[in-house]
Length: 227
Image 1 (spheres, rainbow, N blue to C red):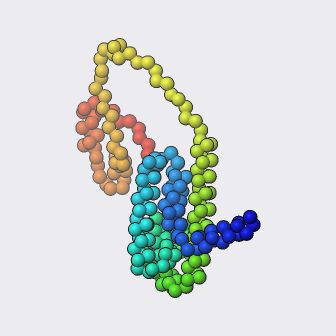
Image 2: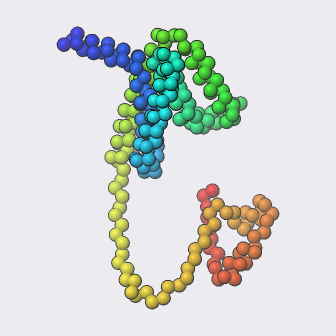
Image 3: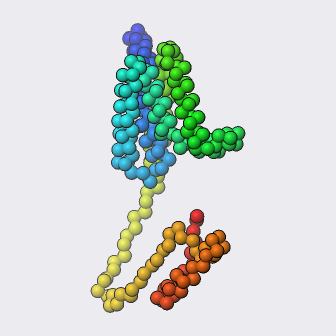
């Protein structure tokens, strides 16, 4: 029994070193992390469709890299590097913007070119190092398994601890009692500067618009915006 367990452990270790399972786990982690950060905003159906689309693209890239390199572990690392760069480039830009000593490269174009060059140079240096490639495959497989499990448990606990929404009962309304319906129009100028902002910032007077609405018996209400 002990020898069988050791044999299974060796086979599993060999599998994790040579098979890029992280290519499947990467879109799963991306969707789980997205669901965790945006719980209640993103629908599960939309997220699963996105995950499947990402997986399809990654598998196609993996197949192409495998044909070019003839080495599955190396093809997996190339695919993972390109996929991670594409999926998390926005997070990379935000991270650079938040670090003071990286302000010299805090430019979208600079980060884009520099990050691609680093990936290309590292992949070229790694090309003939079989043992290192196997170690990286092993590390990425373990890393993505841990990340997916952690996010899955965190998501489950977050869903479990969500407060139950209150059920709002509608009040009965008798439409037959309404004898007359006034003409009410509510106009909301979303993202449109107010009269004072236009005057102070752009030296533009918009009195004609307000004059028109006053003639049409509209009433100007106080406004407040968070942007």
